[in-house]
Length: 240
Image 1 (cartoon, rainbow, N blue to C red):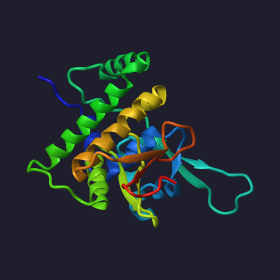
Image 2 (cartoon, helix red, strand yellow; image 1 turned 180 degrees about the vertical axis):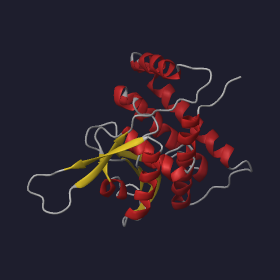
Image 3 (spheres, helix red, strand yellow; image 1 turned 120 degrees about the horizontal axis):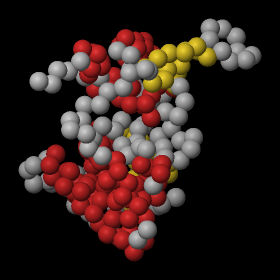
């Protein structure tokens, strides 16, 4: 009989809280240790609340802390956080889905004439996601509600996403973590193309319109970007 080791149960318990899991995911995805201040820019939480989540993750061995001494900076040294000595794999039996995804992306990248097919495929998946979330016939909604529902759908997939309304009438869909790392870094154009198509398909289904314009302004897959930022431009808005 398979017995779950106690340390695995401890780690699973630590990650059971959705917010704590997102904090852990952000640390796991980071290229360098992160500070409470940096995490505070990604989560609508007080620094004290973030520290509580970090303490629980340290207790479970999932992350570790280290003191950062910055030359010329007066005051207490900063504490940063990185992945800890423990890791967890709850996939039974083991499956190499990452390899399968790599193969599919390599094939897509080597066949440029399939670009339109990838976009159509991504958009249809986006439409299906909306239909799954709202089983009753979807009535068209206004653009603000549509973008907010897209953010909610992405959250269900594990993405930390929210919406900012701009003064000129368009919207910023901000994703603080990338659903497709590390594949989005190794196959950035193809993965971002599919991701944007997914968003576009959801918006088409929610608004009942096909004239959906997106501007992919930032991507975590590029160096030094802290978020994915997609500008949603409603019809009759200038694409400036």
